[in-house]
Length: 447
Image (cartoon, rainbow, N blue to C red; front, top):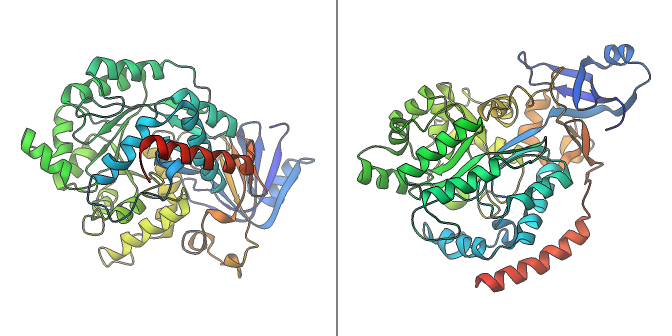
């Protein structure tokens, strides 16, 4: 961006004191936040700067999506039937689609997903690691100005697209880590997980991630299938087994971990590994989260927790506020405890605590001087905001969603203005996506 600007509105800082500043202001200079405080004080200390917004705006940190599949599902979004038996959606739909995904499909899918994410205030997306052509996804992220971690396929058991021996899979991961992805894109080591990774592969992946100072993520235990399989094979619960292999650590983010027990919670916490909870996916797929809501217990014991939207045939909408509200509702209803967890806690998971869990809390997740300017502005003139509540966090989480987002900044650059995602023509994307979807369905042999 050129020149410093002042963003005006009620500012939810998510700083260590969790300040909420009525009629506040934030100064963005280059990529950095240089001032935060009451509007009058900030403007007096920074004369002559352009002031954007009004007292009715709501200014928040950018939202963190800890788990998102950027390719595959997007071009057939909300198409996989929601009454299939466990596993059939993956092997009858998702795998055939990924097998036929082209380079152009990968870039288009990522463009659409990231455009929706940015439009709903998600400034950072952690990709789930099922991309055949990560260079094309990086192009999409650069075009849109999104902050992204990117990964590629990693599995060595069973049959499917990009399954290979351990050396081949790790070589593919290593090449991605060594690529020049740019300042906003960080490669991670990504495995499919479940029982589709041998011990040799997951240990090798953990060593590779640690040696290069990057993160490692994989899917595990969204249903009871993984615990049953690991117990039969190793005699141990999955996360206990992985802890014994020295896989878990502060750079590890386990996607899902729904069906875990106390020993696994302890293994996660002792090894400082993070969990990414994607509650809409679990409800959409009927995976039993309301009976196994261990994420609340994990959080209560100091576990590092983030939220994710997952894929467009599971969580479907790429909207962090929607996810935060659902998580808060489960956290109240499952234990029948309206006191222990609320809107403020949910917003923390979507911002600063999610950023900290995923290793980027020193840069983003809160509005503080010196941090990178990932900022969201909600327009509170819509009917859902009338009358404006004296508690903006309560109203944001329970009474709104991403559709009230007007402006978004990533590292100081405006990527959404007046509700429009910059850098893309949605009308032309819609036409392109319709043609690509029909062609992909035909080639994958799905209806």
